[in-house]
Length: 396
Image (cartoon, rainbow, N blue to C red):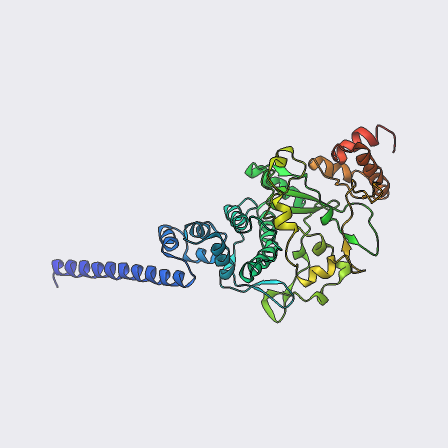
């Protein structure tokens, strides 16, 4: 064979390989479109996917990823249908113990920061669908089931944002990691929302003083929530207790009998994602037309049996929440025993840590009395009390 013929053969082979390659790419794209359509994505969402040529195909199976969020925005569905679409992708199913199990072929992304676009979008859809009555209202069957799943899904969102902070930032404590995250993203944190429901105590022991404090992100939206232990500076989450079901490793063990009530503090006082925005003590938030946090997060459908057993106040072995210090009985006498230690920021946390364990109960009771005397002025935080009242009046 002469040189020219060899070159001609080479060009022919290369050209055919290119054609085959192009055909193969086309086939793969068609196959991907078919796969996506089977997951109830429409043409607009698939077009959005095909434009993202640099994204790995598997990312569409990751709920909360940048690509998935773009496709969720693009798909031509109502907010209600979009909520159902995501939950269907995740295989969200309520088991016999009232626990939400995620058994679908889609997964929640591990790269979900507390201020993620997906979280804002998801929260917006919930507020659009449930914009009048509370989440636990007597809805028709379809909406009632959706409301139940949405409430239970909050704990999974909380798990993912907590994981994100722990895995991506450094610090001696979880609190330090959260502060590093906020500094890196230039976010303002909110400390003003009351945390008495995250300071439940064993009914059989009685209340002593707060064990935890609350932070919400951002100061404006109060969407993502973190509960932090006042002694250790580490997160408090129900996922510290939950474990895999040994018969089905894809599911969570939801049997209440497997979680001793005396060791259930993280379940009783866990953080959770917020669909609504609480007003707290921020004056600007009182301009909001309503407290959506009460309607969508407090007035919620049933918790799983494992948490109901722990927090049911009718149970003599339950964990119950203390009354706020401004609570009055029928005779209008102040009977509340709870005041937030952390109200302004980190300085309150560090001020509390200066108090020896042997003195905490007595100092805390003085702090509650101080807050009551200040009414109707708000709780100024423990650092302010320590500097301007406790030491000044020589209580020490």
